[in-house]
Length: 381
Image 1 (spheres, rainbow, N blue to C red):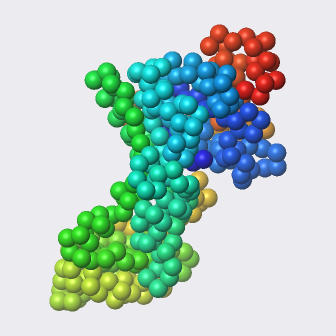
Image 2 (image 1 turned 180 degrees about the vertical axis):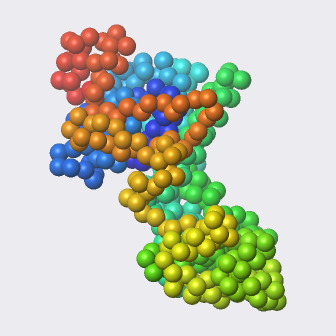
Image 3 (image 1 turned 90 degrees about the horizontal axis):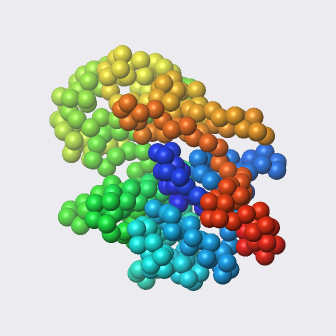
């Protein structure tokens, strides 16, 4: 619902012609979600921008053959079902690549195509739980917490997009089209901050520390009078500048805080000192003292997504895009974070209506209006 569509939306942003196949009548489940009454989900709008949509039931013989005719012209097939679903439809990687040996086949499922959990169902929270991220997230005295948003799905989507681009580059060099088998559990485990590596060598188990860091302090989010501010130091030089900025220069030479290791051991204590200082000030006062115009430390106000719509830094970077929509009036997209020299970002069309490009794409396969009516009556499209 999210990871595969996000990966292909990112590729569409870069210029890929992405054809989204959806169920006749209902379409993608993600079409149904937060939106105005009777409108396609806004989440769907964001993760399916810049694509073309056709309806097609690949479980029916004629639908399967139409899919393979699309494969004839495709650089890649990307699928985000439970592992094994495409094979049940007689559309496995072997079948696809027998039809088009230059077509990369990229799959992302909850647990991949091998191992004892292959084929099991998954959602974002399952990937975060099984991949170790939830155990790292949350307060020390609280339960494991899921990372905000559909973080697990978006991490999996980023790996899917990266793997697909790597496979296409390899194909152009070697002539061989790869099959990519990506597990969302694998993707999450790969971004758990070296926790398994550290435990294996030092026998230090992963802890839930809230916003604090196991090996650096001060490093936390602190409540100011009108919001929250995150402050981070990860060097002795930055710590000394922080001590001067909060009028506690003696801490810089205190043996209890002399280096990373001892500060980390006393992280609750040192983060508490900073929190006490922040608590009597506004966010602007804290950022004025600690930010670029003051001590020049890594720090930021904790901002909500709705606040960031007006963030001057994001606006200057082109990360807030507004697009006219025929019924909603306007759609706001997150901008493309990939900035290349001497290249303007590609204009990103709106997400397609269900089957919006049926006539256009099936005409490219040689089908005319009469063929489409027949296929609609048979519920193939």
